[in-house]
Image (cartoon, rainbow, N blue to C red):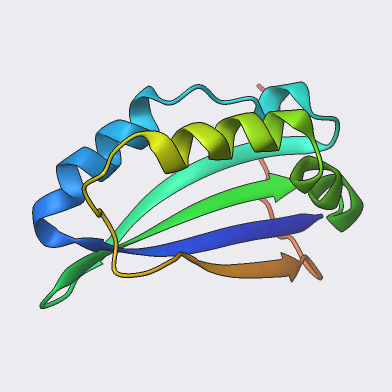
Amino acid sequence: MFIAMNRFKVLKDAAEDFEQRWLTRESYLHELEGFVEFHMLRGPEREDHVLYSSHTVWASKAHFEAWTRSEQFRASHTRASTDSNKPLTLGHPEFEGFEVIQTIGRVTKAA
């Protein structure tokens, strides 16, 4: 499994616009083989920004890399860069990629 994360430092007065952009965007992730799940996370508020992180889980690093070369990736990122002239973040997002070495899940008992 592979987890891809982008951390965004969102200007405090742009947090609502940033969230709306993500909540109303068209996602193509479900079209890609190996996609498991996506989360948009809101983190702590700092003096000049609010920290957000997009968190995407893939079956493997190869599946994630295929996403970055796909038409769906280009379509989703083209729209993101043309949605607004108003800056929403302090610079570009910071990418972090992780290969999962251990997963512990909750065990549920059968009824």
